[in-house]
Length: 160
Image 1: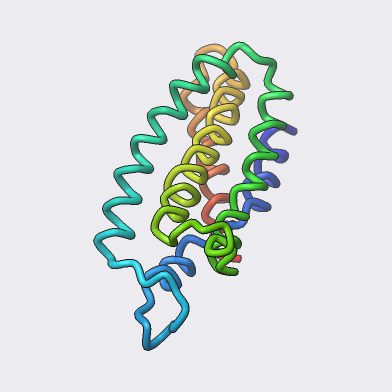
Image 2 (image 1 turned 90 degrees about the vertical axis):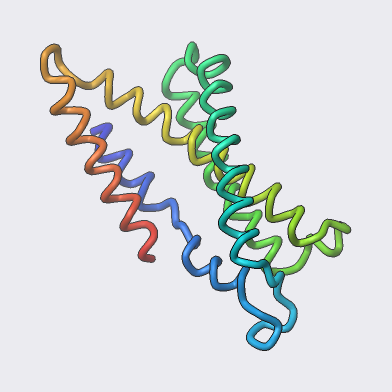
C-alpha cells in the first residue's frame, strides 16, 4: 500500500522545469517582459546554490525530522511540496516586481533554494520508508524496486 501511495504522490507532483527553462532564458525578442537570464546564470548559479541547499536540507532533516514519526514528517513535506511551484507562478505573473524583488533574486530564493530544499525534504522520508519496508536479507532488492517505481513516477510527472 505504501508504494502505491508514494506512486500517487510522485505522479501528482507536477514539474515544469523544462518548460520554465525556456521561459527564464528567452531573449527580449521572444518574450519582451521575461526575466532574460543568461544560460550561465540559469544553469551555473542555480546548480551551485541548489547543491548547497541540498546538503543543508539533508543536515536539517537528519537533525530535526529523522526522529519524528513517519506520517507527520511525510505530511509536512508533502504540503511543502505542494507549495513549492507557487514560487514559479509568482515569477511568471511578475508579482515579484510588485514586492520589489528582482527576477534574479527571486529565482534564487524560489527555484534554487526553496524548490531544491523541498525536493530533498520530500524525498528523504520516502527513502527511509523504502528502507524500513524491506525484510531482512532482501533490503537491496526491495529498495531498488521501490526506488525504481518512484523514479518512474517522477519521470511521468514531468511529462504532464
